[in-house]
Image 1: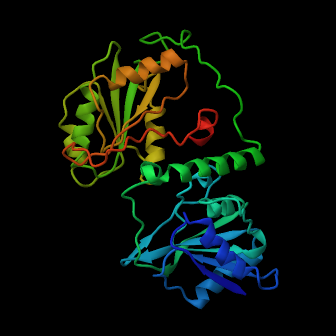
Image 2: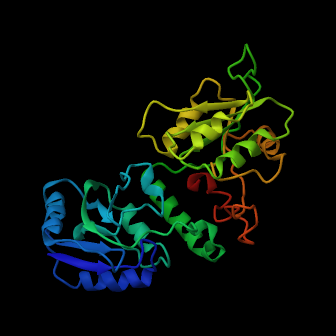
Length: 343
């Protein structure tokens, strides 16, 4: 039997989830019982495809299954639910997810993150790389939850759930981070790194913003040598031509051979490039630095804190640089003792 539960989003209140699960568990448990979570009212899925999903759960060693789907005459291809990706609270499962009833765990003490807790407990999740349903409801990417100041309490609860999951998996980082000694690493022709720092910018079809990003990086004032590595993921909107027009020997324009890389793969290309400096500093292709001293401040912090990673704060602006929010995204939802587990 398939019990259907409609929820407005994957980040839902525990009260709403509790009410839904109370109804589901009021039925006598059966090994062949499944729960179909739908995250939109606008979903069309056939009985045949629901049967296919339930067959995958019945015959495979899976706790849950999700699939790609049709939206506006296009196929939306979702990411695989990998070990590293499962920690994201906003992981996109699409609009429906079929879960074995016996695999569902619920924590009634949580206010915001009950579904996050539930799906972290799923040990083996199958991604069917085929469109099995349709929905006109698009996901909104205007504002990530951690960017909204109203979500501070929720974010701290998500951090605790994440910490609990890492502890159960034996992956929780404990104690103080190990200080790094940079003195043994030489810079220059005889050293391990060609420059002190590299600003790495992955880009795909950002012709309206990439020039501002690159010029912001190249205009940094530092007391060390640095370069700017742009990984151009086969842009087709004029981004490539625009980058070719920028004349600066510090700019390294890379077009990878692979055509299937996403932003993480492009980032790895930059980090592993032989011209990458000792410190790899990320800049998105639609971002600019807040001042000409930002890169210097980041590198100074690496040395001062003997740190392996430095995470900065930022504000949201429109394309003209005008602030669209008074809220500074400073990641204050990360507690001092647990922030590196949540990063």
